Length: 196
Image (cartoon, rainbow, N blue to C red; front, side, top):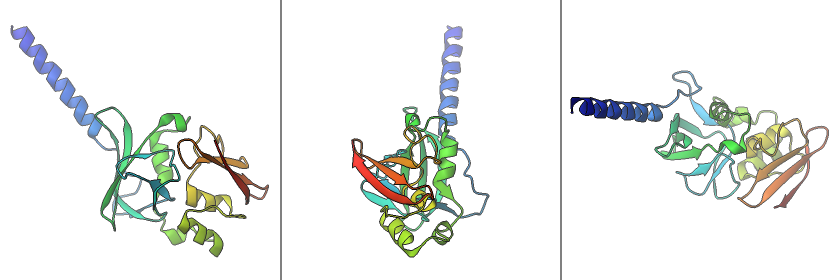
């Protein structure tokens, strides 16, 4: 009888320890006291369920939005997610990590690309007025350089674009529609194509 009670207590302790570890956030990239901003536009339809593939659909969290409480968590269903709060709007967001879209990348590396200590003006330094206006609208325009595309759309998912050195980057506007962006040899947008 005592053996059974001790076993139950040990099991309960083990489960609770695991639960606490799953919910313990990893520390943010920024040093203590540093302000953190979104490094690129992030689209969402439901703030509590954004996918790491970043479908270009719905409302936009603009590049350069100040955020706080950035954490990596594991949900009770064992899904990894990055949670954060937009400072001005006081609105919480959750980005769910879908590993198959990011081969060779960890959630920590993904988080590093998602946030920065640079404000919007610093992110867009050296860009043309046309590029900056397009970024603010969440649009790709002709002759936009790769850096501007990254601020506008974020890094392309690695399962379809293995390296940013390539001159074709693939994004998704929805689950079934992809957008291929074509660059010339100078790294400027020369066209794009929507399709399945």
